[in-house]
Amino acid sequence: MGQKKLIRFRAIDGYDNVLQYPKDMRGKWAEFFGNDNPITLELACGKGEYSVGLGREHKDKNFIGVDIKGNRMYIGATQALNEGLTNVAFLRTHILQIEDYFEQGEVEKIWIIFPDPFLRESRENNRLTHPRFLYRYQRILKKGGTVNLKTDSKELYDYTQEVIKEIGCEIVEDIQDIYGKGKATGALAIQTHYEKMHLADGRLINYLAFRLPEGEIDIPERHKKHKAIERGD
Image (cartoon, rainbow, N blue to C red; front, top):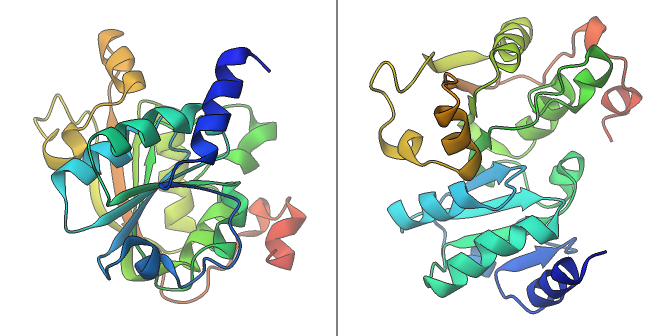
C-alpha cells in the first residue's frame, strides 16, 4: 500500500464522520446524527462528492456515503468536516452487507451515481441495480422510498429498465440526456469528477428514479445464478 493511502487510512480512523464496519448501528442513526431527519444513502460513493453536495443543499436531511474504499472516502469525509457538514457521514463496508447497518424503513432514498456498469455478462451480478442488490435495498427503504440512478452508460440504463419492469417497480422519473433536455437542476445538477469527464467527452447522462414493489421482491429465475439471493444472506 502506498504512503498516501496509509496516511488517508490513518486519518479516517480518527474522523467522527466515518464509521468502518461498525457493529450495532441498525436503528441508531438518529442517535448518531442527533436528529430524526430523513436519511439518504449514496452507494459506491467513491470520493463522496454527491453526499457532500446534497448535504450542502439540504441541511434538514442526513446523508451517508457508502463504499468499501476508505482511500477515496477520505476526500469527501475531509471536505465535510472542513465545511462543518454535520449532516454528512460515511460508512465503510460492502454494499451486499447493507442490511446489517439499517433497519427496515430507516432510509428514505438511495442514490447510485455513475457506478461501474460491469458490461461483461459474466459480471452482471455486480451491477448495483441487479435484483440481488434491489432485494437488499427493499429491506432498508421506507415505504415509498426511491432508488435513483444517474449514469452515462446506456447499457446499464437499459438493463435497469428491464430489471425494474421484471420485478414490478414503479418508475417515478425517467430522463434520457438530462442536460440536453434542460433537466439538470436540483440534485441532478451536482457534478462529480467523473461526470465532468463524461460531459467533456460528449457522453449523454441518463437518470432513472423508481420505487420498489411493496411486496417482497420475487427474483426472476434468470437472475438466480447467485446463491446469496436464494438464501437471502
